[in-house]
Amino acid sequence: MQETVIRANFDPAALRPRILHIGFGAFARAHLMVYLQEGLNAAGGDWGVVACRLNSGAAELSALDDAGRRYLVAEIDGDSVTAREIAVVVGTCHPGRDGIDSLLDLIASEPLSVISLTITEKGYCCRNGRLDLDHPGIRADLENPDKPKTAIGVIVAGLSRRRNAGLSGLTVLSCDNQPDNGRLVRAAVLAFAHHRDGRLADWIDANVTFPGTMVDRVVPALDGEGRALLKEINGGKADDNGIVCEPFRQWVVEDDFAAGRPPYAEGGAMLTDDVRPFEMMKLRMLNGAHTFLAMLGSLAGLETVDACMADPVFRKAARSLMLDEQRPTLPAIEGLDIEAYADDLIARFANPKLKHRTAQIAWDTSQKLPQRLLHSIEDNIEAGRPFPLLALGVAGWMRLVKVTATDGGTLTDPLSADLLAIARERDGEALVDGLITIDTIFESDLANHAAFRAEILKAYDSIVENGARESVSAAIR
Image (cartoon, rainbow, N blue to C red; front, top):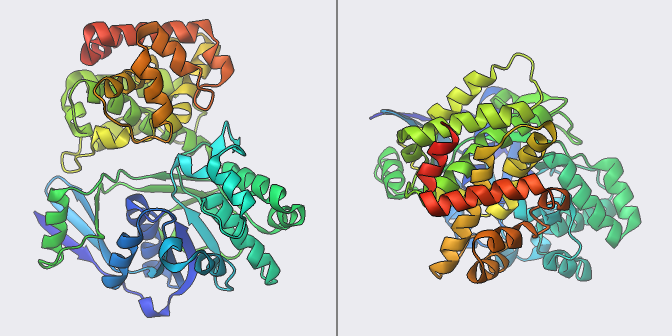
């Protein structure tokens, strides 16, 4: 295999802690840090990153410190691999390891200009687009605002210290797969701040910006084959902080920075006034197809996305889902060939080197269904268009919940206990009715729509009677 290693051409010692990244998992390491690295290579600057995890991950951050805060990102496709040694991290922070004050003081430090986030959908503690004031973590943080544990509580507490120190505002940059992610995190932060201190909320509103973003790169969980590849590239030394991912990457960012803009554009990001059309396209076509394949592929015994693409039924279904049921719900983007975009996605899904596991994509599905599948269903119902594949995706999730409950398993999902409790006692029509009444997933207008209920029940019954693959095959004939 042909290997190329790209090293930093800037001086890491010249970097300062100007970006705090909360949620320093695999995606952040393979996406945001690569853009910053490439930007610093192209334009220079002092934009260093402090990597932060709020809950788990303290040991991983310590391991990153032990490795000199360097790691490899290996982009693999076919018979070639291009690796970058990432050198943008200047520090790590974990409140469980370092104390919460170390994190809040960092937010209140003069050099800090950006707080970026990859905390997954559940990390925003929102419900139907608003801060969930009944969320246990939010309630606890409002009762103990100087000892926050949620990301929203941490941001507000840090901004309060920053305001009290007489410093200027900064930028909060959400990079999670959520519609209007900038507006969502802004609404959550301001709502929390209002409940804590109205004057603080006013200061945040006037001094802090919340740009929207769209991020795209497939980053599977690291497996044994990936670790072996990284070790080979790293001269025989293990790189437990490294990442293996696809070559493709895309980042569209709303150009609204309060305290200087990192060299993201110089690293290849697209700056725009309106991220939403790109965001919706990616959420529905790429992420929606991923969730569809994760649900139905898992039920059919296919463990990876490339295995789904090797099956002509699932390959055809994924493309049909994108173009026949998702494309009609999307705004037009000038100059974009949507069919070519769909074909590129199918080719990316088929990359045999990634081994992107359907079980990993299925994590936290209750938090992903609205933006990936349900909003498209609502649009199709309103327009009188059929949506058999979208319905199969939702029904496939319901069937996976039922199978997991029957087998005595667990779900990696914040609603796992509630979902499994419903599924243990119900099946068929009773199960469908029980799940669609969960209002944190299904908005009442959709849940009470007769056509929606009928289509989901029809799809669920088909999966039970005919199997997942045959149900998908019947839907695309």
